[in-house]
Image (cartoon, rainbow, N blue to C red; front, side):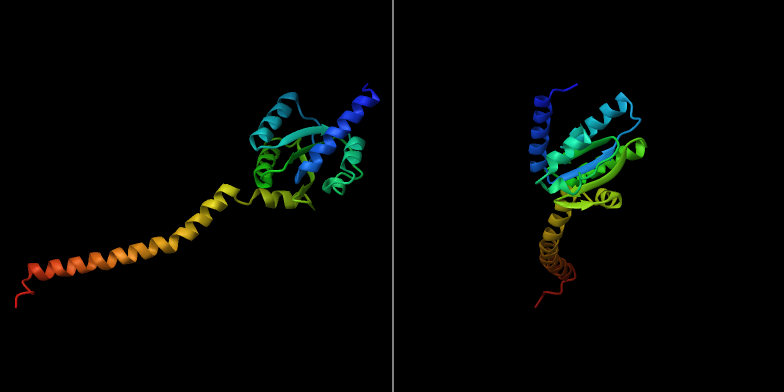
Length: 175
């Protein structure tokens, strides 16, 4: 059994993490094996996030005064948190993929950039493209008009050269 001072340290550490995190996903992990838990933690680290199994009362107290207060109110059952201040889409994708492969891991709710979302909101978030994909599409859209302009300008010169070349071959320029 933990001493009161150790519980206080856990509470303070979780409060600091929740204050820094804009994106928090609440999940249930009942009936997971050690291997499944290890794989889950590895997947979450790969998405640039953190994972913590929490005591419900400590989580509720730690969330007081933070954006996650509404999310972590009145928790019941075995709960865990996956949280990040980075890309919420990457974390949602990683968790959704893991949940499909391991039905014992279930979503309960989440908080994305300060807004509480339900399970369908998390799944919708997971279906979005990642930041890198969005940046690539945006860059393509920005470059496309310039690329078309260059192609058109080059086409005029190329077409003029073809016409002049055909005129020379057919002796059309003799005066």
